[in-house]
Length: 390
Image (cartoon, rainbow, N blue to C red; front, top):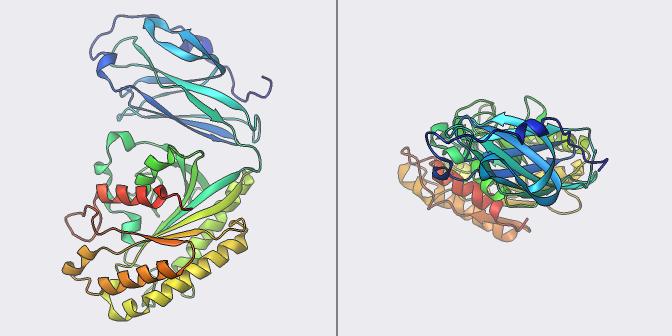
């Protein structure tokens, strides 16, 4: 008990709401609220979703199961020891509750969590989320790092308005590197998911959210994507991924190095598990770039793996490299070399250890017929992360 890292403040007030008569929309008409947890060495992030907008949400924690009755007939499935965080649900019915504690305190501690929602649409009605089990990581535990890079379809051009309520807000099980803040943060579309923060678009990372919630631990995502960029060579600044061009590649590696150092400073061991690339559209516009694509991609994969090994973040294992194929639908809209680039991508994947492809030709497209629509980006992200070869 002495190592339990969560303060017990606010326990009494949350568990003593008076029973009231429901008015307005009833609790039965609501989708049941849900709870997701990300337990880290120095914090616990809890996401509550499907609450009524404006609801007061409280996180309850305990060590043993048991029935704890609440006013109005609801019941917790744990014996609460602490209610360390409260928040109001946003306009989409989602809330992020964060509990911070000294680094390493309670390492390895197993605990139970459940959230209480004071339903704003039914006066005094209390709802509870499903019970969740969690465990604080041990110091020295490994952290799975995922890298997403490429051009516009890795960046994502789907408008933020296309993101449904269930995927709005912060997602603590996908920790994305915010380079401007020099820290990992819960992924939040429109806030920290693009190269330049606060852009109102979303990319394949949104599909990773759905896979990450079922993984045994959070993932640590580094995303760098720039529109109209090629493997090269091509003129102009900030548009070439070639390792020798001195443009996008060193910036990607700088961010991976900074991100893995930050993970190590939290007492975890960063392991770069998966490199996801969605790139090739620009090269499919130029016969010279298309002809050089196979060699350029082979060189990029080899250089990236070697540099990650030098960072000490590979753990003796070669990171898996996953290539999103350029889609055949690009041919009729002017990308004349799309078949040549696809053939190069397929050949490289077939002849390179721990490398595979993701087909994108059937993904839903935006009206411009070049960029993936929201559903296409969502499926791309699901497939990138969901194949557990890595």
